[in-house]
Image 1 (spheres, helix red, strand yellow):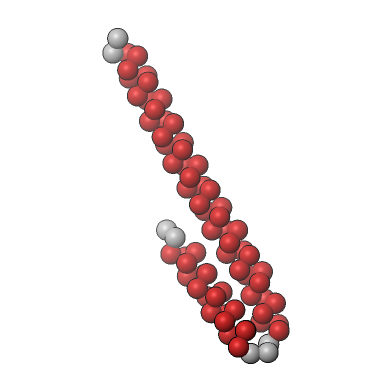
Image 2: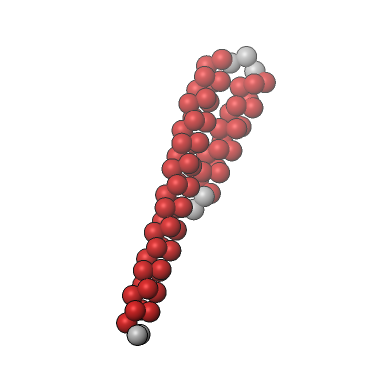
Length: 72
């Protein structure tokens, strides 16, 4: 699931490396927004994954509490 983010990050890093070795300022200026977008989308992915995990744990705890109260 993380592979597309790593692939995009590697592509942007390659472009940044190519831009730093040359004097093409236009490519360098295009790389910076791309790097930021990869960062933002990956961060959103991580936050979503953490919130899903928290939600799943909460649902499991709620189910355990309901099951425990029925047994009494």
